[in-house]
Length: 209
Ligand SMILES: NC(=O)c1ccc[n+]([C@@H]2O[C@H](COP(=O)([O-])OP(=O)(O)OC[C@H]3O[C@@H](n4cnc5c(N)ncnc54)[C@H](OP(=O)(O)O)[C@@H]3O)[C@@H](O)[C@H]2O)c1
Image 1 (cartoon, rainbow, N blue to C red):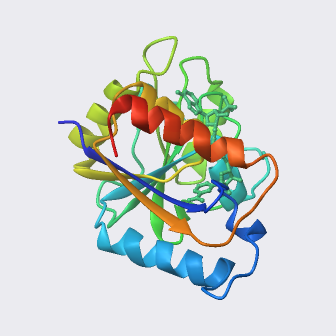
Image 2 (image 1 turned 45 degrees about the vertical axis):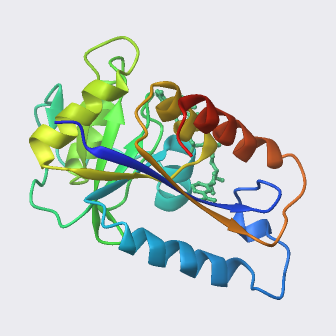
């Protein structure tokens, strides 16, 4: 069954999505607002959270490397764990993100990949203890991916946590059930304003407020 998808985001008053660039304000800066974001993340009680390729690369920071041991590559999916308390999921169609360990902050990593991803990348992920699901269609069918996450990992509540790229894909596919948007008083300015507003426009179109 499809997990319930809750889009949880923190934006500045002018729509910026980069807390590290928020201006100082009497209500607090990056640390205070990130802490509020994390508190609400906990209160939303997701079984898992999902981010786009760009955001996961910022978290993982690992470089490409040879698999520590060779093994048979499994398709369409490989689950290193099915008993994690929480899962950290990345939407990485081309297989660009690498990992040096199988978890992010204790949450087990699962990568959603495109059909054309190389076997060598799957071997690297498996050797690093990371789980993955490979799309069976040319374009990733997000609804089908959600079904697999629900069926195989018993994920019932999924927090969609940005950035704007992945949020737009989920809103466009009509897969977002709820929006949790924290608007922080600091502003950010610059071109990032467009990033958040594109997500917001998609949200209005999807009728999710
Ligand atoms: N304020 C907040 O609450 C918050 C939360 C999260 C992130 N952020 C910030 O947002 C920034 C990143 O945002 P972003 O919009 O640039 O990137 P993003 O959403 O993290 O990742 C976008 C990438 O995900 C992949 N992707 C998205 N939809 C896909 C689909 N339907 N099929 C296959 N692949 C898909 C694509 O990777 P490819 O390009 O490889 O195809 C796409 O370029 C970061 O700097 C991060 O710090 C802010």
